Image: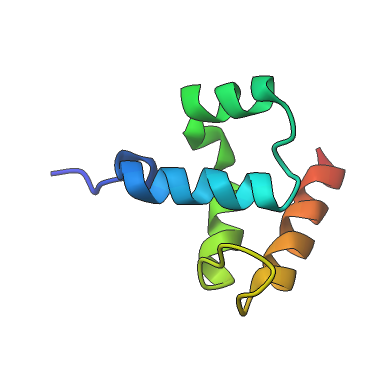
Length: 77
């Protein structure tokens, strides 16, 4: 049996999307729709979020680490 992917959990996917929006990574409705259609395209960003401890916003530990990691991802694309 195949392991579940992070995006199979609707609550986790929604929390991750909200974190990306809060970080300014997803800024337009089109980007948010793209995330919702194909969340698997955001595996690297999800890994950065998980490594940072799943922070929701700037008030949580790991937020700066997460934002810096996804900023680096965005620049390398």
